[in-house]
Length: 112
Image (cartoon, rainbow, N blue to C red):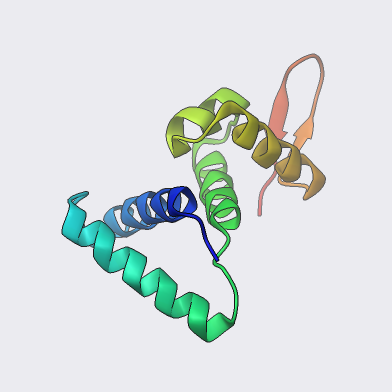
């Protein structure tokens, strides 16, 4: 089962994605409760928890490609996650071929 903290992160991510798509949600308690209920329903159908880290990873990849640049600090700021989580997402982006190391501390965002 998804922990309450993971549900909150996932809800925030879903609200931001919906707002970016032009579907306006507020961050009030009723919107969050509705999203939590929806996520719990999805978990029952899928027979398992929804992974908030995958949702955050997909958001980070989209934002990196839109901006053309990425850093652990940018992921940390934009996704409002901890620095360690941002580092894991960054490392996964390298492993998945989304970004590649150039020289020094420079990274290149590769096209989709």
